Length: 579
Image 1 (cartoon, rainbow, N blue to C red):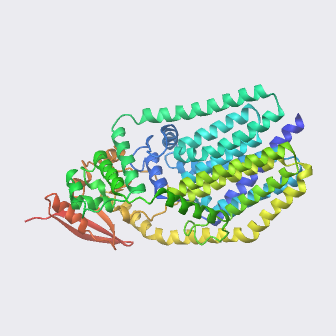
Image 2: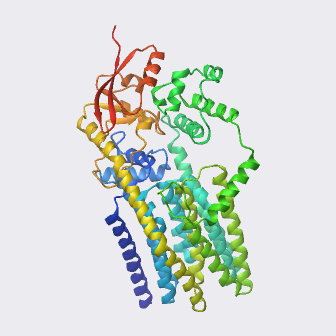
Image 3: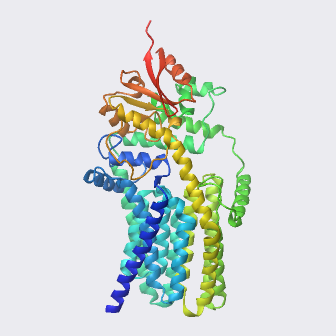
């Protein structure tokens, strides 16, 4: 017993040490970034930078986790709590992976190979996602880790841990967790089949049914709390707007005004107002509400020239087959897309497990059949996202990470002395390829991405410094002038209320934006832009003709005057024309 406790403590220390080394090494090479402005806005809502006080409604996450993070911001006002939370979720997933591998594998050589492979996986594949952090991929890491734990663990504590990870993933981003659930379900199925073979069948069935019920009841409770939290204070109306906006911008094409005049007239929009939809600055117009946005999305869907489904499936299948085996180098962090070395790792893991299975009888046949079902399932998931043409790397890499964790779980659980040579050779092959080829490539791509972001950010940093120095003013930023900024984590953390906002975006017209307007003494965006201390920020490359046309259409003659230029942005004073 004492020896077992010592080994457990030693494994915890080793896993924590490996995780810390990876984290510190990446921190020594790079600054940490929020990958997308979605995470930046969520951070601003949670921290209080948006409204002046930490908000429990951050729109994208489910309410319970938002409430918890906002509470932590109230306790630690000058900490980057959201950034710390995402990094803890990612590195915590790696710690659990290392810890469980050390616990499960008894053979020293196999344990060493498995751990080294997992370290190389962290550097050769996941590095970019550690540096440019995004909550979607973070959820995929947690879901993949849960799949690994299901296969390699046992007992009540393991089941509770898996439930907690799945529930947390669902709270952080429910849509991504639902996409990952089939992979996690396959892990649950594999372990269920193996436990049926090894123990009391009736007891095993009872345990797994209870586990599934508790897991899904937890998801229902999480969603139920979220629905209740967003059922008042204008949130139902905003969620209808949010869903309609998502449908229009993410899945449809905004109909041009020319040729669709009759439709736009029927919903009360003229050409100047429609232009706000195209440049995303629709927050200016109070008439663009959930009803109007919903009707535009429905109309866009009705006139869309749909590619026949059979053709879309053929195109997606061709892409899928190509991406399944293409082994090119990364040329950029996200574009042009490449799935290497992820797809190569998956292919080799399938081969290792199959080679080991064919030497066994009944157990081997079950394993091969299981892998066939798994491959069919993963193909259906890939086809789903490729047919829908929504395949950013935060989704595709997430899917591949989860699949690797499932396959690695099978490998780790079945590693034994007689299989040592086979597994060691397979693992070494992966290690050699990743170490000699893909790790330098991944590091170089991540460094180039950091260099490019630093160049782009220099203009934005000058702008934000300027606005901070002029705290007596308020600045409305043109949406397309704001999208290229990548905020660094853990740098110059303030969390005080920001004296700026964008003219559109997914938080536009929310109760939180109304709260922000009220904090600065404004009624709406349209009238606020004409006040003495309010300014428009727009890229020097862009014209303000659309703004003049909009106000003219409202019967207000305006004069945009450039009062300053900061880092490639024009600071414009919008004044009413005096006769």
